[in-house]
Amino acid sequence: MSRKAQCPFAVRSGGHSTTPGSSNIEDGIVIDLRGFNEVELSRDKKIAVVGSGAKWAEVYQFLDQHKLTVIGGRDPHVGVGGLTVGGGISFVSSFGGFACDNVLKYHIMMADGQILKVTHQSHPLLYFALRGGGNNFGIVLHFEFQTYSLGDFWGGRLMYRPEANEAISRGLALYNERAPEDPNLAIITTFGTRAGNPFNNVFFHYSKPIAYPPIFNETFKDLLEFEPVMNRLRIASMSNHTTELGAGGMTGNYNQLFLTLTIKNNAEIQDRMTAILAEETKKAETQIFQSIASFQPLTTPISSHFSKKGGNALNVSPNDGPLIGKFHISTLCWEAKFHA
Image (tube, rainbow, N blue to C red; front, side):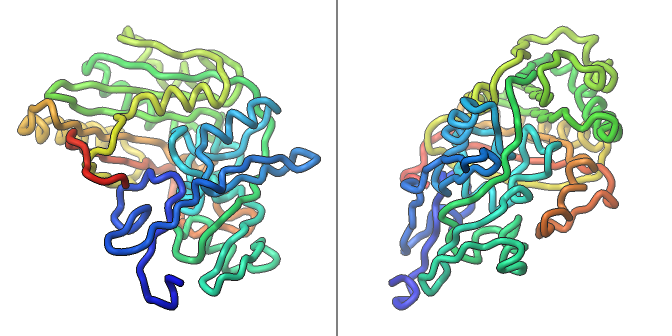
């Protein structure tokens, strides 16, 4: 109907994206996939069939019961569909790359209404495009993910006073260089201001039930000299860890600016970007404004998976060296008028 009437439309999985036309559209139709929220296992438990409208909280709550996981999102409120077709970094990306690298089959509706089951063998070009190429190639209804064994593992959230910021940046850059020695550590560092007050959050997740593994103690040696204001490191399930990360976000439908940038692995660049953020946001010392910069390592062990199983469309390889994904989010804390 939309095609014949030339009516613009958008497709929403979890509705997490703030990009206009991504999970919402003006003067058009929004196709909401929330009803496609099934999570099932194959008989041999090697494949998880997941509806595009499921949220990662639902996926992990189901898989935790079987001591299994898939490579997927870290925020429980994010939808499976949008994250997966866009790439999808994970707490356990060391197992096999991004979420898109671990889809064995896509169940996708094409523009003419037919539903295809797309694999690397059946439709190699479409399969490649769906692995990180976004949502422009059809509407994915279900994904068939490769599963991995995973029980409880170590990780959680730390918060420090601003004096520890440089030690945080140095530790991330050092781990990024040394990740081939032990690729199992995932890191998210966040620096920002809220109501004019600086803050930081650091999330560490190690995909084994080992507290303070040697690679962590060695690369974050300087940070361990500082006493954290808050320490929630523990051994827990995937769903427990994702719930914690999701609880750190702001609830409600707020006006947001969301930007990303990929940079070479460098502690000084992180520090300078953090300093600029602090300087600029002083001009908006108000209760209704929050701005953060988040840094996450893209290690060479992770990018080594991008060329496997049919490859992906992200155009990153280990030859690029360790990289850092930088995310910037500014939030104006009055609620948007419409759900988006």
